[in-house]
Length: 415
Image (cartoon, rainbow, N blue to C red; front, side, top):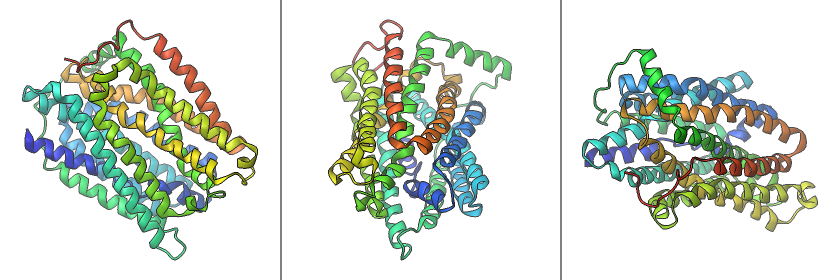
């Protein structure tokens, strides 16, 4: 078990080595894409995940999570390289589709292998602690890749805009992750159910009130997490007209790396926070903190001086400071949600149910992302941020107030 956990930790650090991600918006802009088209390109990624989530979950249950953990990073590498091979709108959409498929492949198997490894050793109660550590390592690995990408972008070209080499670096690191995955031990044999029987079992699990409620909550939280993330680079591009440092790719890479470093401790501290304050305040606090931070960003972008490009540098830094507040729920949410599901779902369909929950969130967000970036293209970044903050706060309250009674009680680990 010790060797398996060490390999899972190495894989976690290399799972998402996205050196190019802080600069993809700029890469798209350099190839003529508008903000509305950017929203459509990103939306294609979520549509692809929507299509692939359940089939890849079923496939993982049938052939084993290890094979999927090798395939996922290779698909990521192929998707990123597609951005270079076909640098036009259709090529960007195709690349995002491949990336969506890759993320669907990776959405359940790492968690499944971890849980089954612990379960076989009689250590299932350690899941939240171990998953929190893996979540922290994923964020630290991604943060390091962001910093590497910033250095490559700045010094890879005299004009400080070497976006293409950051894409090559990302694809190379993804292939290293696939190599690490080949050293993992696969899970135990899985029952080969006929598909109709298998699907009925999944439907029965998802119809449980607790899991249905979590689906609604996950949709809200996912949208509140993902929209600001996709808007960080557009926000920095606008704020850079006031604070020139935000136009420096090394500073951008550093900011993205520091955000991941800020999120990582909260992933590792999640078990202690659960013990200290309980689950209910955490489930309330994560989405409301995101809404509040986006309201501040919206205000900064819509005050007269900010909107006219002549605002103060202090206000620009205040808006960017909200990026870091948003890393608190980002660091905590995955382990909390995974713990919630893993202790309520039977082992034979666990991966597929996790994929089904993810599918619901991504299906809704695919539509929201396109609509919000069209709004942003027409009305400005501040209007889009304000819309998400207001609607998100209402949706959070509605979801939390309709949860099954007693669902989030307790501060200790779920048994």
